[in-house]
Image 1 (tube, helix red, strand yellow):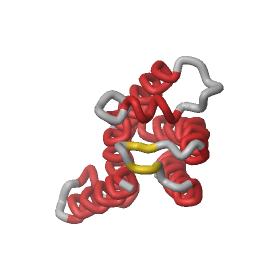
Image 2 (cartoon, rainbow, N blue to C red; image 1 turned 180 degrees about the vertical axis):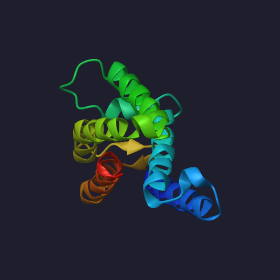
Image 3 (cartoon, rainbow, N blue to C red; image 1 turned 90 degrees about the vertical axis):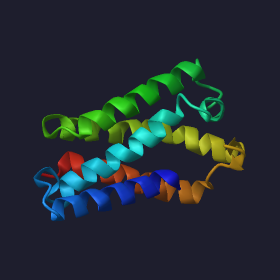
Image 4 (cartoon, rainbow, N blue to C red; image 1 turned 60 degrees about the horizontal axis):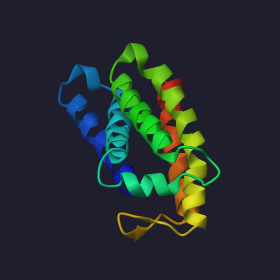
Amino acid sequence: MAPLIALLAGTALARIAGLLGVDALDGWHPALRVGLALMLVLTGVAHFASRRADLIAMVPPSLPRPGLLVTVTGVLELAGALALLFPATARWAAAGLALLMLAMFPANVSAARRRLTLAGRPVTPLGVRTVLQVVFVAAALAVALGG
């Protein structure tokens, strides 16, 4: 749930900043870019911090080099978060991030089916995780397709 909270809170706070006179955040589209970037920093850092082992375990067993896959996806999330903050790169970054989220979803399915844990707690149940994934991909597509 932390990524959803980061997305929603980051978007809301950025929108409030826009309403208070921060011109770069004047509108929902730039605020959503900030919220999405905050969410991706949170999830991207997890690929290199205390949850790394859990994320490696989430990679479906049929995929090779799970440690490398977690590293690559973490780097892509962090690079994408940075690119979202610049209007010139935001749309392309968001489109790429939507594709990345879709590509990583099978790891969430695999983790739920194998009843893995993340930070000592069961991973999010598959139904809830699917709804969250739809929200995250929709946010990225809103940035990619928005103005």
